Length: 341
Ligand code: PLP
Ligand code: COI
Image (cartoon, rainbow, N blue to C red):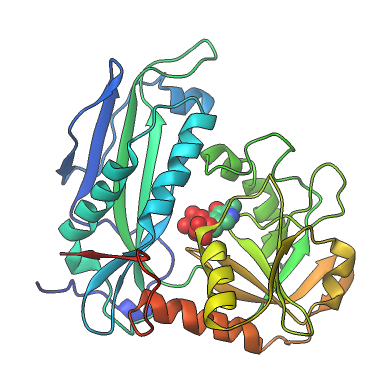
């Protein structure tokens, strides 16, 4: 199979149309068998539930070329399970988990020419999603849905690759207690757009959202969870019912403990204690681990001791080990890599 002629080392995090995508429709209480199609356009009613009341959920995952030339995806079973949680919370039908994994595998297999080569720094981003497609005008769930998976090659999410980021403590709330912060619904991202544009206009790379109820505890950013490292090398991540349970974060906590022998702790993290940490990073499928160098809290600048030029040493070890596992350089825990034939 010949690879597409793309400038792999320099692609950004954007949409590049690939050859095939997976589509399945839900009607009369059942999903159809699903197909791969070359048609990248979606045609739906002007009154579709997704267009009127934002009934849409999605996942984000990647396919990688390993050092020995295999193509793999990373823990797709966890994305399938999380999408089930999202669907239930949004009153949408569940796309069966084994069919979800199969749809992802089919989409990658049909777009192998777009999976960036090993060592290029790029990966194939996969976007499974589902939306209410039939007309809905009274506020209620749709009765027809479409599930799709497309693939697009991507480079680093943050411009500048692994250069430490500057983030600001946001006055906006991302999620309410008992709201939808813990699922991957499009609405969580729509309402974060004003906050991220404001942060960018003020010269920041991202927002640090606090818990909406007390405004004292660290939650997450618009698209990644936080990891902190204490001065005695303990890896700490915020525990909250209103953040997305990041698969990258869960994997990193395992890697920290089982591969690097570090102590790990998932607990409430207060904004007040952030200045005591040695390192900070943002973790997610798109972000991988992006180091944070500075956190600005209403004019008060908190510099992480790891500095503004490089990743901190523990963050770097976590990054190298996780990406080593994903690229087949380090042995993966059983079941973490699913090979695409
Ligand atoms: N938090 C939010 C709000 C996200 O959008 C994402 C991205 O998926 C993450 C965290 C990281 O999750 P994961 O590691 O599963 O990609
Ligand atoms: C991902 O990391 O896959 C996400 O969905 C986050 C998004 C901000 C790109």
